[in-house]
Length: 302
Image 1 (cartoon, one colour):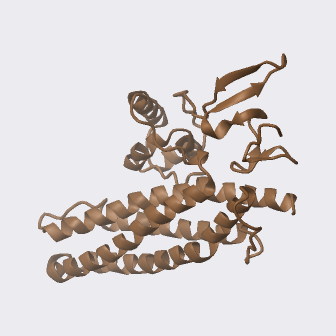
Image 2: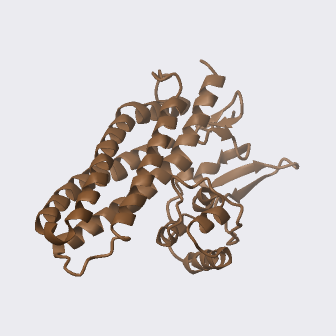
Image 3: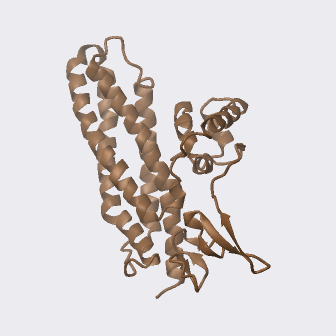
């Protein structure tokens, strides 16, 4: 191709970065915001392309994950409402709202109002528009690092609170430890599997399609296999997070809570918020895009 797009696979007219048909078939790169479209009259016209959905209309049949992908600014409000957009992101909004015990009409109006209020603010990063290697590195450098540090911090804080408040809150704190301990163990093992097995495969496939490295060998046969396992483990972690909230009554401080008790509950809540964002980026963006990339790679053996 005369303009030498660095991302388009000329054999199948597919964008290697996005693992889907080039959009548009053009002179220029849609990923960078501008493309020269090839019009019917053969006249090149510069056009700014924007994937952002500017409509503030949110429909009940949309999945929660799709809503968050289109409107990342809504993540914080959905967190506050108790609507799961990561593990439960495949549910239609109407079902998720019902599960949270909320009124659909009220929530629709509130979410649309939130979008209107934030239109002038700096937009959140559109992680659907970056190469998968960039997204994977962001998850590793941001969420994996935070999770490891936070788990270790919570472990220490919980031990101190158990020692100081055993007389009045021993039963609750023992239950908290009983739930947190397996969460810590499972998450640490989970992160290691992603770092040593899954993410190298994802980055290898992305790098191959972008021409950065040789064709990778996916030792599990297909990247879909470890992805399926990671998604199951995400579901398990999500269930544990719900149970932590139940035991702590939504992290409500007891009357005699000391500064360390407060720090413990704040740390648990922060871990939950970060895990929701972490799982959302993987389940709803990174994983399905990598499966599509692997299908593209296998369809065009070199």
